[in-house]
Image 1: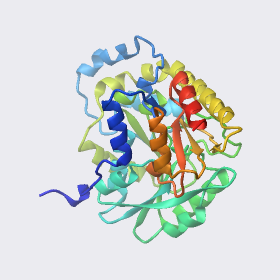
Image 2: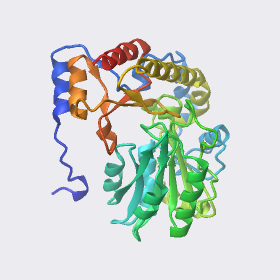
Image 3: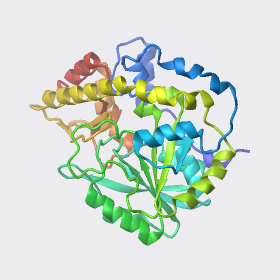
Length: 375
């Protein structure tokens, strides 16, 4: 009766059972996986959402690419030109782009470790997500040779997450040059997820800021209010196209978007206020992530644990000693009242790794880290 594209069987695992049992018992949980900015104790302007009551939103003006005024705000804020299309989210942006680029059975290549929903987003479009590795050697690097080897005649796009989630690594200029060459050689589009670009921590001088106008025949850059404005509930994202095929791609993408018209008018008319009004929120996030990262690095300095280099974003990765398996580490820490995410959730190849959210409120983060280090 049901489509094979949702033939997923993901029963609750041992970790989720243990977490739910602790919650049900009312026991303490220091949540070091908190990535929802609206639940992280940030201070938002009290009148920020007044702009959603703009009277212009009472008139329905369907526009497949998004309202012209909202697109102008995005273009000017991020320097993205006029080949723009607004979406309800970055996840929807992936869905539209997979529809644009792929036929059923085609493939996209995606980084590993990275965002854990790529496989699901692709499968919903009857597309296969093949992974190419990032490797760690005095910092994270794209395995460009492995990326090239992952390309097959069915490949249609290369996905880059820059900065990556959760490694916090940026694509480097030399890596980008090789990626662009692979894309051009095989007639592939580049999809660059840049939702964490506003949160640098320690990027090297050769870090790539954006793939917009990167020299590829066709590149799409994705962003949105969820991370940039720390407003995931207001459901607005964007796709910016560049390259010699951008206009042709955007005309086709407009047809796809016109069948959904998913972006609400209120958030589009409020966009200028939301972008400007959250400048202080972004500063709070930058300060908190810097402070929490510094605390973590100091706390593990004389321990058997190691913080992997973080260049940008909201997450830090902790390499734990092999005294326990990754699952055993998570369960042991949960017994001590600390919850963090295991590396395998993001497809880390080895273990044990612990992924911590630097967005966590400082008091909770500090106490949680103290318990991790003393474990």
